[in-house]
Length: 129
Image (cartoon, rainbow, N blue to C red; front, side):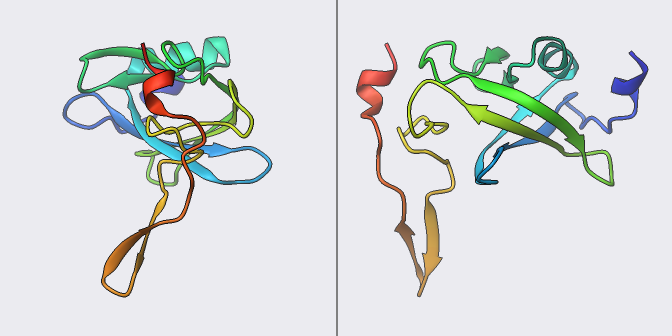
């Protein structure tokens, strides 16, 4: 697939991926993809990542039900970061973070400390089996 050859994969064959919510433009999370994950994402319209900790493909929502429907795939100017425009499914408002929050970016640096700015929408113990 020629379009995949345009990407600058890192030494492990991965590229960082930012998931951004379509509509609100909230940045939901950062994950990684390998070639197969990006190809499956493009084919299915569902976010598929490569889990570095599990060493395998990870279909977002496979355990939690918090699937990401992909509307657009963008490549940055250096061809080394992917941006996905997604709708976060499975809960209202959508939960993208394994902590049960809408976004993984819920800590804000203020006056020498990290302040949590987003509530837990659902207890992670009830999300993951």
